[in-house]
Length: 233
Image (cartoon, rainbow, N blue to C red; front, side):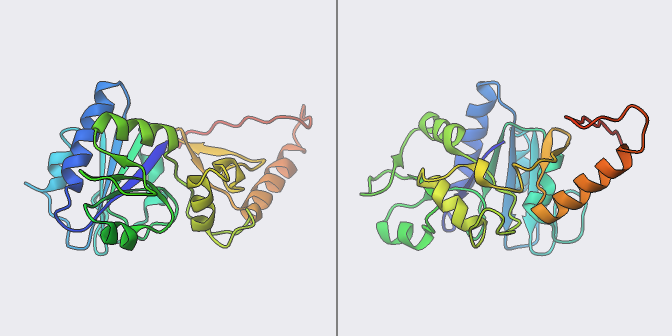
């Protein structure tokens, strides 16, 4: 799933741009999901989230006190992506997320520099800024997200040799690494739920893989090789 967070200060136009991107992706035949972060209690009727739901196939609303999928407690975005059936995930807000790239909405260089944490794919603005890819057209922004968007699992397991997911994410944005270096996504055991791969750090991968192999080895007809298991719950 291609993903990017659109960040900016209040009234920077994030919701409007997300709506335009949703329309564009839908017109191109892609399924799009939206996750909206808020520092306030999430409203329902007449809210931005309700408006977004008219254009997106799935909408998540996340705040510090409530998650808008009938959960009355805080949830974390990587734990919810298995519920989304989408090709593209647009995250409105989430300045502090360190596991996916950012699109900054700003009109001054100081604002951009305050928001830039080394994971900026581009800047949405009516102006141009040295050192940043500046975008003015929705189609160009959609193409950038489709080509370079990504989402790491946010485990900070250090299996890739980096301190946390943020360090790897910054290298990916700079073109110095790829998501294949995430050991939690590129492991010997791969589990998908509704088409979404579950990240497994090496410790969990080892426990599950060895346990499955141990149980299967006692079954008649078992042979070492590539094993496929399908389970419906």
